[in-house]
Image (tube, rainbow over all chains, first blue to last red; front, side, top):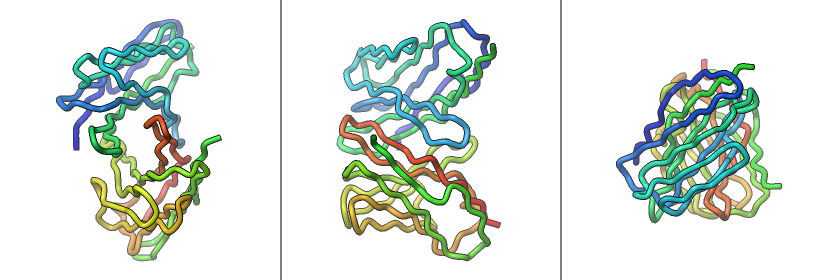
Length: 111
Length: 111
């Protein structure tokens, strides 16, 4: 199992602030995915990044895959209460489909 | 719309009483997987299936069985549940782009 470390573990911010969540590993992945999970619900896929150095934007969310394909970041601009949730990164190994998940970053955005 | 449906959503059972959690997908995808999610441990893969009649162990398979007799269904079987199997369980199907669609979860309590 290839470990993914997410930081920070918890984040509490006010509406309108910016934030960045990090996902790091010593392993190389063929792709990296980000999910958001609401309490009691299944994770929902936000994005898949597949190319080293790739940057993808989804409205106020910006995802980056590291050049070495070992790390990724998620940046949220002007956070809103609707962004509250658990953010999970997951790496797909070369030659396999099984995802390795980080333990998540729990984000709380207060009005 | 891609969907993974699992039932039941909540289940309380007693130690040793066999149970099955059902999972079905409407996407005709080949790869399906079961995860359990526990506080502090994150999402861990229990079993996966590459296709009909092809299943294999994930990271935490002890105490679980699966079957894949048809592509759309992938049930999780606990032959003799124990309290350490109390957890939140998710079934997932792999999308063509590499991301996963998760079910809404089954919260299992074994007393």
